[in-house]
Image (tube, rainbow, N blue to C red; front, side):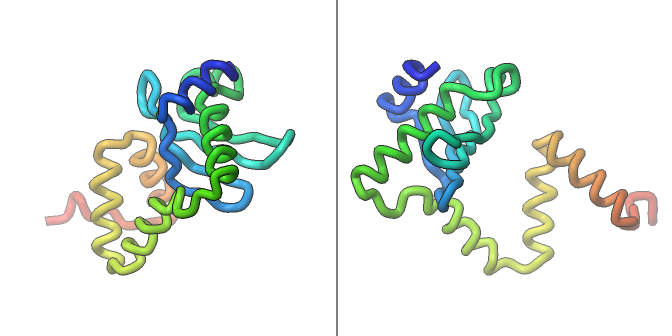
Length: 134
């Protein structure tokens, strides 16, 4: 697993989206693009990945690749890595609630997991269903 993760790192397959103390969010291009989160430091590394191997084994080569990328960035003194999420958040903070709701609904149309999560939250909040009104 380590050797395969190292190969992903050396091939430039890691795109760090957000980095803060103790937590890194990245996309790793593999068979598919996987969302990978690495948390902790040193011997206490943990996290999660959207790949099947993580579901099965609890750790994967994508997590290794992200950890190596972060370590390499720290060794090189990289700045600005992981600013994508900060830039997106700053952009979204300029939008009004209706615009943000529209964006989220649009994404949920294509993401069954998000759609289900939002439906459960809406049901739990007692939101009114206006779809049958005319």
